[in-house]
Image 1 (cartoon, rainbow, N blue to C red):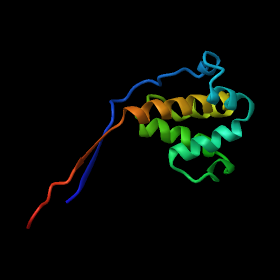
Image 2 (tube, one colour):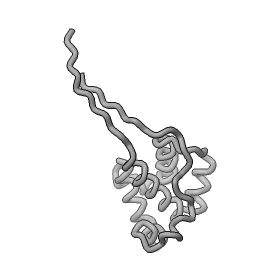
Image 3 (tube, rainbow, N blue to C red):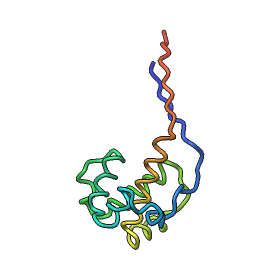
Image 4 (cartoon, rainbow, N blue to C red):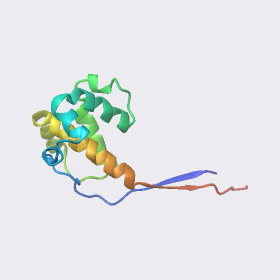
Length: 118
């Protein structure tokens, strides 16, 4: 049988603060998030593995934020996610993109191809 094991780091805090786009404002996600957040939302949906139409649905960015937090075991709660998305939408998008990039780089995949005979 073929086994796939994903090893993820233990739960942690976000690696970047919500206001971090200002520290690296000239970066592509920082500029896109501030001036055309809808394009950054499309990019985020693609990185998250969803259809590019997802950002057109109401509440989809909030759902992706909760999903990212759960997938990567980032501490927080739904109320914090909701507040970040609805009060600081462009900044929340930038933070989500940064977290996805950082954490997808650090994931380790172990593939075992052991054959079992019965």
